[in-house]
Image (cartoon, rainbow, N blue to C red; front, side):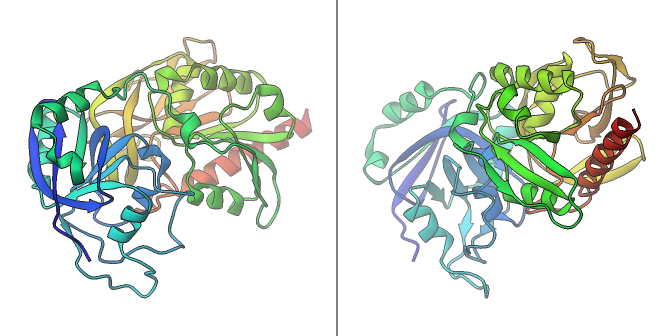
Length: 382
């Protein structure tokens, strides 16, 4: 049962939203961001890309389908805090094992309900993502100035490398399904289980590797290709992952990256990255595939983007040949995909596994498989 203990959300600009405690009581700090999906809250909560962030659900009614043991995308809930306008008072789903409120409380996730999430979202859109804090229990009794000081002392997302917090510590292997293509080296920067499942379904034996893996350790599994996952943090703070990727590209291995992996490919190719005002988070983001002219509705979770020319192919500043921007976000003209024209490497800024979300971009896993098979065939002929 949801109790109505007092709680407050404080933004770093001093804005305050008074509401009710949700989940665990206490104090949490992080970057306030909003997610626009109307469903899939369990997948959102367990997406490692949300580490360090207080997630605001723009859909007003959350929690009606409860929580189950089938839909988590990783081993735990990663959000720093959770903001919901109207939590469901009852759970109504045949797969539900417990309520969302109970899950948040048992896992120590501090949340808040009963605030105007529409007004909060508009403020984040107008001002940009900000540091924030949720205070409940005894922390709700702190004076306003003390709460604001705690928020402003918290680290900003820019400059943070969070990969070590979310990555596996030892390699995990998922067998290939159907006709086996070979070993796929996956750098775990915050991977979702649906991504692993999609790759295994394409015939890859998926080796999920720790983010600290060296090039020699990666090559030791004799991979046919390399994949970089989604993940939290600032790509400009991931120099080691960029250096590893340049070693992969220099070795001639096919590469596919998504979300954070797209930003790191951009850096490896020599382009810059920058922080978006409020990012893209949700399962309804329109993206143009320049090759086909089709508009795809896609699942996003990113606060940074690649700075590359949109209109025509450009020369890779790091010497990897011509590179084109393959996909563009239609809401704000942000780079949503890169395609290297002279080496076997491409990436997208969104989540083709779409858990939860639309499946318009699922074909990208097939495109990756076809690229790897073609590369193997070319090697065999040579």
